[in-house]
Length: 103
Image 1 (cartoon, rainbow, N blue to C red):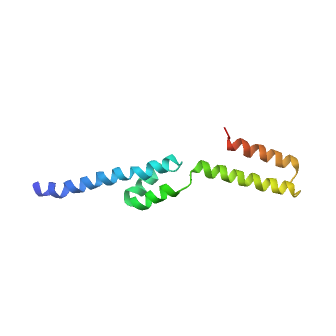
Image 2 (tube, helix red, strand yellow; image 1 turned 120 degrees about the vertical axis):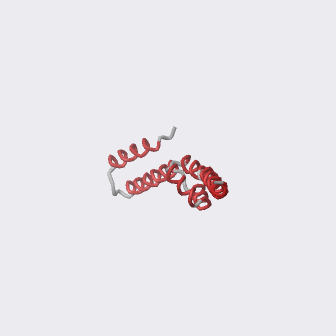
Image 3 (cartoon, rainbow, N blue to C red; image 1 turned 180 degrees about the horizontal axis):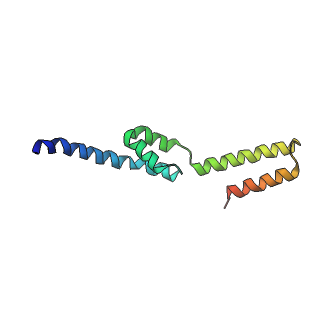
């Protein structure tokens, strides 16, 4: 019984440590709008790469706003070149600006 405990105790200790460390990339990713559970398991098995990815990924809200602003710019250019009507441009502009929620 004593020899089993000698082998089992360090394994449980390392599992608890790695489990706790995996919370770091998962919490960073969750704050940026990504799957907390997915990054937990990513961090559980590959802590260093998960931490790097979690730090480097772009916040989903920022990416969404950037995409909408790029789309609005393209619609503006198409309108200025006469490729779309003023009504179509104004309708799409209103939709995109509502989605941005610039409060």
